[in-house]
Structure formats: C-alpha cells, structure tokens
Length: 84
Image (cartoon, rainbow, N blue to C red; front, side, top):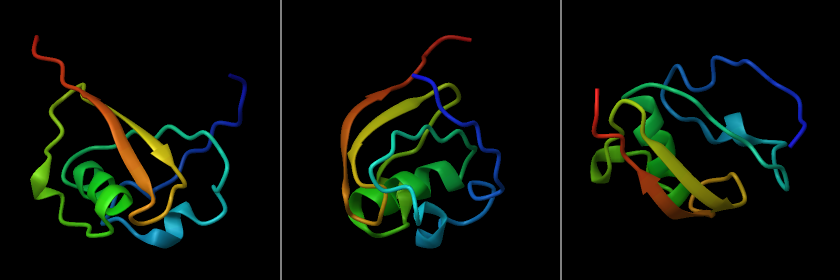
C-alpha cells in the first residue's frame, strides 16, 4: 500500500499512549528496538507497558489488529527469525 513515511522518536523511549493519538483507522508499521518495542506491544495488547510476557528477538515481526491505543489491539501472529 502507498502511504506516508513518518520518522519519529516515539519508539526510542518508554511507550506513551499519546504516541498513537491520531492514528485511528490507519494501517501502521512500527520498527523499534528493545526494550521499548516489547513494551509497546504489551501496552497495545494488554494496556500494561510491562513487556516481560513477550520479548522481541532481532528480526521479529508482530502482526496486530485493532485500533492503536492501549489494550485495543489483538496479537494475530508473532514471527521470530531463528537464523543469523
């Protein structure tokens, strides 16, 4: 799909619900690093930014559905690359 590429510091720090404000109804892709990407996944799926229930590995991809706000998304799939 065509879309606008936005670069932001929003995933370079602890997850903040304000980061997702205004993204309702859009398809988004987030790329980030630990620990914040796991914490962001936890915030979006459970409402709690404690991402200890899942840890991304290098090259991992999570597919979420729902609205990008706390506890409003569902984890559809998690792919973890096992090779180097």
